[in-house]
Amino acid sequence: MDFYIDESGNTGDLARTSAALDFGGQAVFSLAAVGISNESSLVAELAALRQKHKIQANELKLSKILRRKPDFALDAINLLVKSDFPFFIEIVDKKYQLAVSITNGFIWPPYFNTPESQDTVWMKNIFADYIYYRVPSDVVYEFVQCMNNPSNEKIGTYFDLLKDCVSQHSHEVAQGIASQVEESKDDFRIMIEKEGDKAHRRFLPLPDIGKRDQEIWLLPNFSSFTNIYARMNLYLSGSLEGCRIFHDEQAHFDEIIAEAKFQAENAKVDPAQFKLPYSDYNFQQMADLFFKASPESTGIQLSDIVAGLSMRWYQAHLQEEGDTQVLDEAVDLLLHHSDRDRGIGINVVGPHKMAHQLFGVAGY
Image: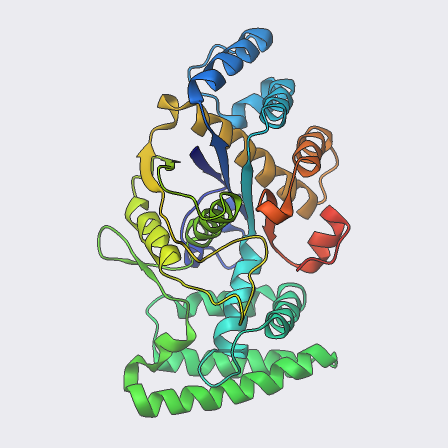
């Protein structure tokens, strides 16, 4: 089986957002993969849909299709589920990813804490939700600023800013965050004694290195790709040998995505200690990764439609837009053909309130 991957919602560095945390008008990122055994049969099927809806363009781009031919998008999703193609979708709420990073760096850093478990993940999710909804945007933005020319001084200042902010709240979660931040700042002092002026690196996410040797912070494609790859591994019960992954052409981030694949293959998560849901990070075999321009691949064009619909669906509900009928119909089709035990479906990296609103469940 070959897997075709495309993204929607600007895959760029989250540290480049403005103080409004608007992420250039694209607050949501999605990455979608579709598994296809024979792309040539898909070419014929989509050609028939093109003819039905009188679409002339060589490349199928959802942004144009939704404006002019929304029924084509629905028919494309119908084709996907009718053909029983496995699909793996990651939706990332970018502000929530910042909240998670603040939690992992300043509230519950890994150095002097207990090993990861279901309980610690649950607690960190509660903290991240609180930051997402209750911590003002200017305080979250100061964390973003820590990634621009990072230093011990900036990190120390942010510990104090975050603690001062939540200490003004009476909520018990805020009190828990304040206590944890104080303990974490003690950890920071210990790290300074051990590592000097490099200690701040321990409390920030690991940056990726771009093609011009620049640091790239919090690239949502990285974590989304690794989890989709682990979901493919679960779906195929580890039998990835001979499979190919065709990712939409990436002029700036292809090397980083290849590194993400390598890191996933070498993660070796012990399921006895911590079981990640609906994915398998214990790789016994590896798929091959290729980058391909979307006009040259019908499979990538189909994954573009899936990614774009998913991103716009989440963003429409996040922003409480009025008309979501086409998006809801498309995603309902996907949800009714999900199989979580095999990794097929939609994984949302977002707050529990959104999980409840979208799926009627409290999230993970």
